[in-house]
Image (cartoon, rainbow, N blue to C red):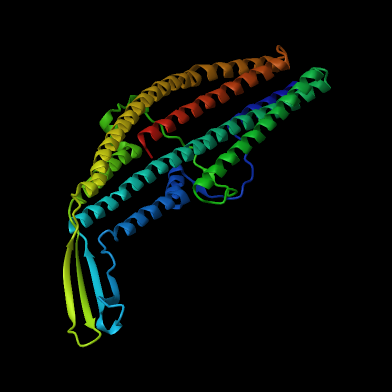
Length: 415
């Protein structure tokens, strides 16, 4: 009869493997990874800063076609020191008229600054998405690890009860009972640590979404499978995907327009000046009207824009080399990531098909022998521990695979 009770307790322990104890939880918001990324895109203050900078550039460029303010001067003119009334009072209005070619070149140059900022925003968003994905996947793995520990906690609790019953009939050793208790408390410490790590990951995600870090939300633990190790990447694909590379292109376009603006400085500006001389005595009043033109091709004036034009050529070449260097670096990183992804997938397959099933059979065998009084309790505990460690190691490999996929998505700028 005693052994029947023990067997029933063991059966209950095995049944508990398929059902994790559910803690009462307050209903909380469920956020999928796509929802998290959408909120970051809409609410992150750093990305909003880029929007304001782009708006500022557009507003600045609107003033590129403005004219200089007119000047108005007034005062005595050709007035003798001996008799003020023998002179004249002159009023002059002057207006410089900018060259429309210059204005258009300056406008296009200033407008071209906006695409550079837009690509900078996209690159920053890609970086934030990568951080959010990594934290989100960390939460998924931690949640799965917690489930493994909760299962082991349930099994150990039943084993401890069985061992205590057996001890009361002198069928178990006291030191094994203490070891079981120690294993149980160690498990609960690990659960506490996992919950703390999960909370920190959620806080980082909330910060990226511009939410209160203390807000708690539920995560979607479903994972999608990818075949990134099979995808081929080339220079054209990387150039079209990466915002930081497109930012180089936008920077080169900006330099070309700056160069066109510098070249437009060879064009002259114009001006007009009108003066009226009012006599202070019986002399007739008079006027003067003059046109003005600048001569920017003068050697002492042309040196500045000529040297700037040459310097822009050098900067354009430098950015082109920097762009090509980044493309080559990205190609190398992607090749390494694909190799690592392939390796981790092979290891995961080995865990799922061979390692975990073998440890489970070992644990089950020792448990069956223990039920038949043919095995010591420490062997059951050791078998359970090795089985649990195998499942945790499998999840560590899963975490490594997700980390590599996040790195691949960052390099290829995949949302």
